[in-house]
Length: 114
Length: 108
Image (cartoon, rainbow over all chains, first blue to last red; front, side, top):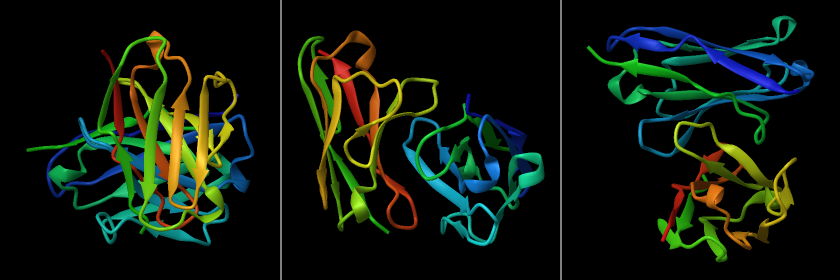
């Protein structure tokens, strides 16, 4: 069974940092691109970042460019999102997504507030 | 980026009725790389349709997708009580991936 499980969310002050992790299982992680998608409370879905299978291609939404860094460790079947200089508008549930469409985790909540 | 506009914003129907949800793209979606998701409160989105018309694993056949180019439709042939939720379209043919703003399907 395909599973992606996010962790690392929590409450952080504006300007702070947080590192999200996504543990993948049930599929060959190393051949899939991976994405982070977020959803602010009561709002729609927003793509955040993507990384190709071998980390060759990396993309970011303009709203997080220069502040967030996506990475992966294929040996550990894990995806990461390093989030720096966090702002109130980054408050959201962050989802890890296998490929460009398909399997989503249950999400991890990031709250940026003083 | 490709902007997706969903209509209507809210659709009020009764169980047993047919639901038709629309997703219009600001430019042509490459190779019909258009997906539909269902999201219930407090849950992650659930993939219903990919490639504009292919049902995901385990999705009942009352859900169907159609369309190409810039106009896409999700149809639910006979609404069940569990179908009342928010529905999103997503294009994944061009970078960046983009989502529509969602259609809320509510019980009339």
